[in-house]
Length: 618
Image (cartoon, rainbow, N blue to C red):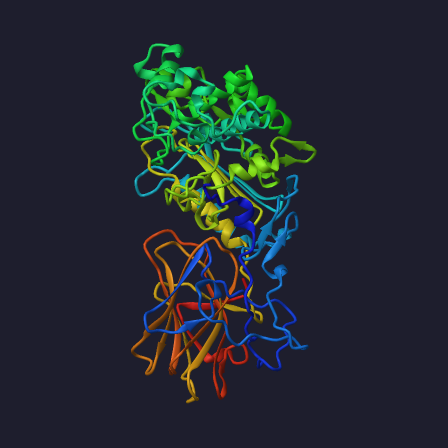
């Protein structure tokens, strides 16, 4: 049976372990009255490697020996309390280092960052970056004409910001309209969300699964017999939903085929580019086919299905296909497209347009708030208020990584997973979302109960002005950094803020025998970043003891290293070339040997020298 990483497994806490002595006290005198840190640093989501000839670490998960357990007052070994690393759904925490269990149960309301424990400064900086992208750059034009950003934490809409223009340009070359002829972006501007439409199609298909009309493991040809030609007889519904069907990414339906029947036939007739199930290849044709499948098994057009099963029950009044002309004044303009002229109020995607404006891969228009409601319904396990649009098990499957064989392309049944290129520091194995070619993105973070929506009209006046990914990353990073990583000991912890920054112990007094270094660490790094723990006999030549890396685990860990005596220890942050994660934190540093405690940074903060690190309370 194929092993699947379910959302329940992702959100479950990684296994316990033996607690170590609390900084500031000896093992005999220390009462573990609160949670100690877990020692399972070698579990999924982060990696820890001992250098050859280095030290022995306290990591039962990797087969090494745990020693020096802390004991409570009555002599029993203390273990970490789950409440220290786990939050309850629906309760405000403002924490990045608290992992939620279960589904949320929230209906969106307006509020402020402060009331749900968020730091408004990183959010303000992110919103300023988005606003700056709407202003002319060194290239002479903005990255995009306008944008709406919406952030949610614990069911509270903490920020909605509109910047720039919904309509700005007079032609494809970028001649600007007079200011009095432009249309300003507003919080309720309606956008062509492009491939975010794929989520609506996926939900519609999964509703048919719930109704017993579709089985995801069955061949698509069972429901669309005409699809079986040219080597596609074995392609399953699951493979379409996860982009592992082998179908090509695109066909020029709008230009190479004369009418809708011919275009649909072209999709049914297309041959796979690779053996189904052997590779990941993102394809519009997968979702076009799924839209046709949903129509066939339900007997209803796709737009009707989406309205009846999704947008209607959720009250998404501004979401759907082919918006009425009466709403044109609220709709963000997209591209000038040849004979079509300025595309505004019609789907931008040429293939969706050529299929009548309703297609499985594109065609949906929506607002930031409507997408946030959809996102909250997913975080709630398919329910919003008194309305249920999906069963919890169905949502779990949609957020399950079915593509573990294809690293870097994690995908559920419709949702993309763990994509740092637009999820930024919110990325984790549980983080879900989607983007759209018009410059849109939706990020759902079940681990913190957060949502980030960024809608831009980056294809106005044309599609040649560069990637919107820097704005997507800025928004997600801003929300991630607004969430706190609280110190594990005392009122502050150390965090790296510069490449090659070091946190170094003062010279240690001469002791007796092998030394033990205990410290708490929080690691959420991009794949090329790492934290290296090193030792030195003279403060000049260093040897590696352990390398810590990885992301998405979102919990403090207690690390114990036992090795030959050293005069100094240090923590070296090595910054890679990729996108930054939430960062690395070190707390509760303690060095001891058989003679006793040699250094306790909680008792004496001056025992650590920081270069490119700083103390923080979040």
